[in-house]
Amino acid sequence: MTECPFCDGQGIVCRAHIEKLDRIIYICDECDTIWLERKDIKETSCNRFDNFMEQNGLLPLWSELSNIEREW
Image (tube, rainbow, N blue to C red; front, side):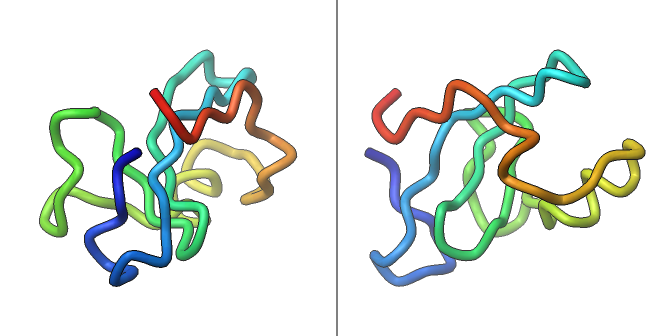
């Protein structure tokens, strides 16, 4: 499992699929920070889940995600 760099061991970065965008993201299950690439999971290359979803015309809800995996 990959720990979120922001959550001091409290958040796990999950791999998830946004079906409506046909896109894989990596999202912290604690703070909702996202990364678009697996190799870029660090503090300097992140985005907010709500901002990303709204920019793509979607509601920022976990129900928009599928295939959520904590261990990838």
